[in-house]
Image 1: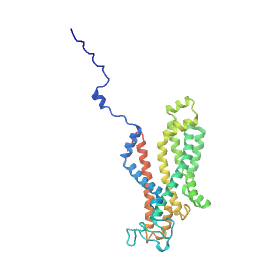
Image 2: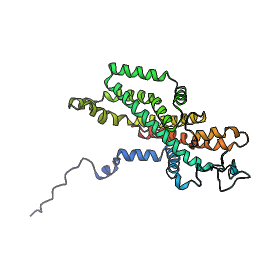
Image 3: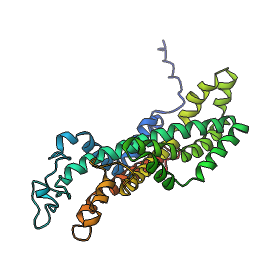
Image 4: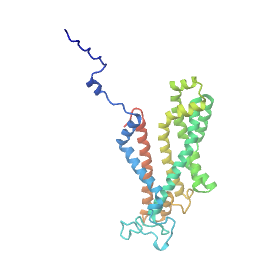
Length: 310
């Protein structure tokens, strides 16, 4: 009697070694995170901006003195690394005896507030105009293009100076003026990106399904152009911070006694030949903030691009 033989196992498409050799599928979030951790510029910008943001948020806790407290008897004390410097005022004092480190820390709040607020206002205006022009085209595109051309014909610095001189310099005026003047790049980039996404099949499918125009713009097109908008937002944020510093330096921006970095440079201008640190310290702080924002924006562009540029 012959024992029954067991039937052979069913053939699979891949052998076990071949199946193990297949690469693991990574999620988009994991890919972006891995690119970010290996991108030197992005990491440097993120660390610098994170430290400045932490100092701005924790200013009441880490500032050693009241940034508005004046003591003329202790005016223009040099930083601690110079001969007559003291640890009580690590970065020295200004012409009114106010602690320079405390004013520098609180000044980061103003710079970040102006940069974020101006980028938000200009982003809303420019993105709205650009996405409408790119989606509808035709007359809407022609009207938006005319508005953008008119805006580009206006020099930002001169218009900002004129508005600040007419209305008066203040924090609110600076934010509104910069927000209403820096939207053109958002409009141009958004229009171009929207025209590319507009021709994709998923937009045609959404239109065929009867989705409303608002839903198509907000749920189908806008998420697919966020990569370009993030890069433009970082550039305009840095631009707004520099313009605020220039306006404050000319006396038409943030007004005393607020500790604006541009205002600190302007107040130290008469002493720059004898106490150069009074303009060097806020100048270096301004440089590091703008550099951090630009590095972060450039890194975000690279790590979120589909091809993963490096």
